Amino acid sequence: MSSMVGAGAGQAGSAEAEGDWMMPPLSVLLKRELTSEKIGKPDILHGLASRSKKGEDLTFLKTECQRVPGNGGTTFSVFALFDGHNGLAAAIYAKENLLNNILCAIPSGLTRDEWLAALPRALVAGFVKTDKDFQDKAEPSGTTVTFVIIDGWAVTVASVGDSRCILESADGSLYLLSADHRLDENKEEVERVTASGGEVGRLYLACGAEIGPLRCWPGGLCLSRSIGDVDVGEFIIPIPHVKQVKLSNAGGRLIISSDGVWDALTFESALNCSRGHPADIAANKIVQEAVLVKGLRDDTTCIVVDLLPPENISPFVSQPKKKGMRVLKNMFHKKPYDSPSHLLVRNYFGPYAVEELFEDGSAVLAQRLNMVYPICNMFKLLVCAVCQVKMKPGEGISVHAGSLKSGRVCLWEGPLLCQSCQFKKEAMEGKRPSRNLCRKPDGNEYY
Image (cartoon, rainbow, N blue to C red; front, side, top):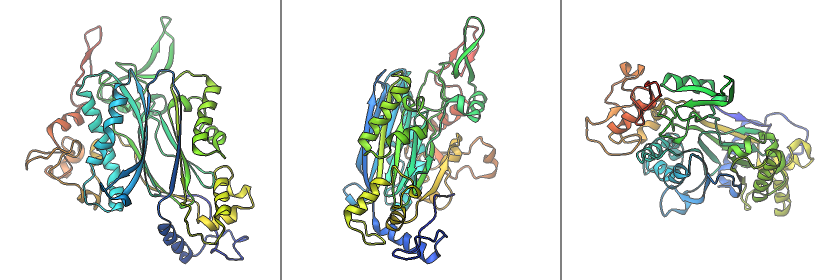
């Protein structure tokens, strides 16, 4: 799957480039791809702004992580937003443990491309393990998570809940990199929750009128996915929506915000009020605009991340550094056809393309862990696919056990789960009572 934005310019330095809007020949595209590889990693600039109402929004910003410890050439960046509810405990726990749980789920000794290919499964495993371990503490708190990993020009986003991440590419096109797991916004999730034993409905007034958003009962949570929320039930799952894209070397801007922003602003409004500003000022502008529109009704947090071509880029057409940097600044607040400088930008940075590498939002754990060949061969068989505990031959349980697919696969084949993680999987699917079994006043059980 791929998503292409805009049309490529002609060869660098060509006199015909200005009037020719046709797709360039394959040789030119290949040359650009090779040039893109030589450009190296982007410069990453970020800004953070927050206004607190409940004090339950937390962020995690780390720009010097390493795929290979001690190897500075394997750095990647992480930007995460945790919007807690019913207390801070789940948000704090996820902030302190989620990254490590994700990295522990990635086998060692992989190349960069293999590491990126293994990342979607590792994100699922890390989210589920973090949720399982936190629920063992029996604390009622929960949190949404929007977790962004940037490695070179590749951006991978995993999300549960209603915080969102959007991308604006260099030509002004908008890409949604996360999912909205509010029950009001997702009919499939409503059907999944009810099929797993939950009840979905709105609050009732004494007069019988319904008010507010759809909620899951018990607990009254208006989300279908989160980390924590042991008091609600296992059908509120931590399996994230994951999307991975590759930006062109023209770069782009990410906006990661809590629902305090998105309940007040559309995606386009957030982009419009931040264009033309560096990341730190842009984040403040977005938060100020959200509070201006609806007041400070909720914690309102925004992270802006700019991926910019490095200053030592080798352009297709040699340009003075200052001129090249001026064009770079303009590209975030003007579409290329709004300015006569767009041809220079196109020649300098190459085509505006955002390539979709991976996307999966399925709630079925077996599907999310069962990667296709050859990615599946990167993972060890006798290791639990979620918690990474080592198992002896015969101890593991196939993720397909009990599913419709189980009759068509060898159940001793992977991915395998330990018994504890298999219980977790069955509970999320409504096949086993939640660890927090509740009863209605009439004596009927909630699971």
